[in-house]
Length: 320
Image (cartoon, rainbow, N blue to C red; front, side, top):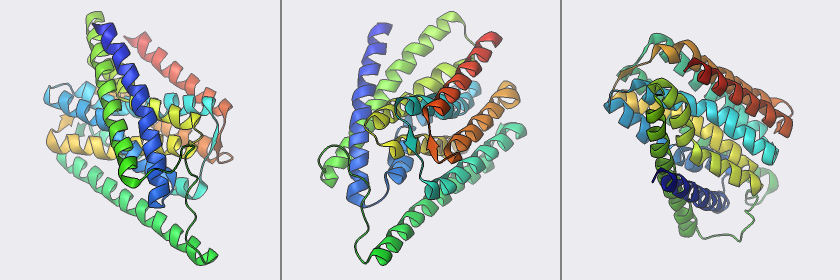
């Protein structure tokens, strides 16, 4: 039965990732915004839905190790594992102007998570601050995109140029929305099947809560991001692949930790505060570093990110 769940989940993830990327790229073209902004919002936040559900369930079940470790581990996996795999498959350029905005926001959010970890508690006031930061960031990102569009129209004396169209024919807006929402639903369902099977197996092997949250649950709930970024990279939609990672990490910290804290305040496990939250900070710095060095993420940098994630998982395995 577990094998059926695993393979069914994988099939749903692949189908959902393809549908989501197709819908997201069409939305970018139809709405006249950059693929990066769609990757940061629709794709990034949509693929983070499993992390939100998992963290809330774990908080109410009295498992803070899974609730917090899920977010911290997902951000580490997104920055090192998923970005690494996407870059190895298809190196891509990074839009300088947009990343100066989004990279700064991601660093600020990560430092806020570190501060909460050192404080030792995910409290309601902290959750309110995180959610306010998310709203502020979204407003700033949207306003920045609108200003750029207006400036382009004024300079060229014509309507702003649309982002590069997807490799498939242009899709009508309602159909593009259906592709995107349907893709999110399929990836969430597929991830849930895989996560449930993985947790059952880990429980049989006696793996501790915090380690399960940081590895199996974190990677499992990041599978939508992994599949979506891989599909986007293969379809040469690098901006969506990269925006998916950055947007998911921002939403994990500001949205998921914020909502979890408001609904059910929980302590931060000492193991996570001592080690893993710093690994997340290091992974975020690495993401920023590979982005700003030449404004392109190369295969070599992807391999380095992947090797760093392998070393982190090996360290966790040694401590079990």
